[in-house]
Length: 114
Image (cartoon, rainbow, N blue to C red; front, top):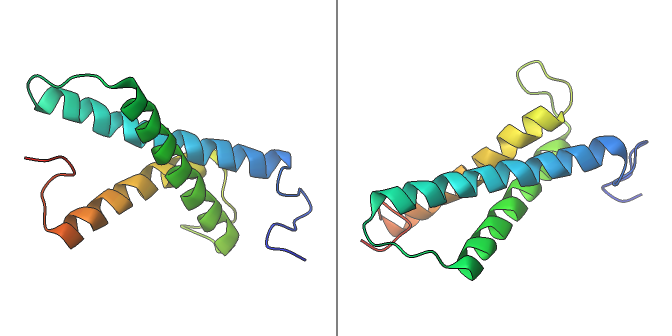
């Protein structure tokens, strides 16, 4: 039995919803960072391939974070399982967590060159 052996299966309705919500949370986090960057600096150009890559990476980070939390199988704040709503929040927080870890390790105040 693998790590994804549940009654609903890895691609069951509940699991798929958690994965999609986690990806969505990561994308929302990526968009938040992108918009913040666009309005914080002058003369910032828009690079479509960079934007797509950033949103994809943010989504994958959110998805992986939500799946990791679901796989832990522990209750959180009285919640017995990870719902899509919680997965969205966890997906958002996963990107935020990684960004802050990067800032701590590199001792920089921003991900972007200053």
